[in-house]
Length: 383
Image (cartoon, rainbow, N blue to C red; front, top):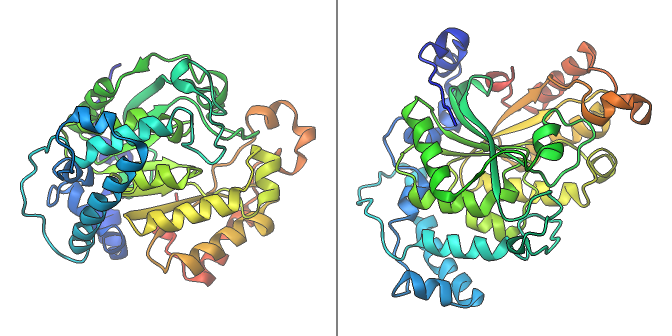
């Protein structure tokens, strides 16, 4: 899989350079991400690999009961999280980064493999035996597919150039999905990757000049078992970025929070009715807001919200209001105006007439005004 470098990326996205000077709050709100990006601190996954656990060997980790693994995970992850909080508060990591064996990473790898079959990675909890070749609600069995990996120049300014990895499959079925070929139709038509191969892809992106390693899709949640294991082998020191609909279980999130440096959640809908009608997702609001609130306590965050036509009152305003009331002003918000009819909406617009058009300028500006009234920090990352 070729990965191209973009030596003149700053000519395409000059805002990726001047955003730091023009908006000092960006560095303030993305403080941990900035320190890792600049090489001042190691990424969380590298530190996790150095934490010893109370098993004598990798074989003992594999033979332990799931209950034993979770108990040890809770104990050692608690130690890691206390260290991470001290680093976030201004401390500096001065320990070595020599990998322990077995490590907290090894426990995470074993736990997430067990979560993936029978599958309880996302809140659909379909419990499909993916390891036996059966496909879950995400359209995937055990294999993980990378459809492309490249230096992305279209992400938010502080993230560019972003080492973006697009995974096949998704636990949503959005009728308007703009990546529907990867997430739904051709989810399994790329070459499957092993954890070692995925680590190599990350390392090559880092060498090509990526500011971060960006896991996206489709959605990366169904591929979590391979993504986590790839971090056991990766040698780079770039921040790990999770670009997701955040519809994962608490167990999956517990594995992930110690590995991700910056979160890029996509908060689409302001209620369950719209989520069910347009994406066939049950309990959307409770699950995603729960997970976003937890993730914000474990890393820096830019929340994305796509403004859809006819959904400003029912979705955009409740989403922005929830962010203002629950994330304590500590996140950046990208209010996106890129919606256009695609996938099923493009082919059968009569079924979803309110979203069979682009959002109007009035709708976009109304969203921006509302964000301003709420005191949200949206301008630095809204394109």
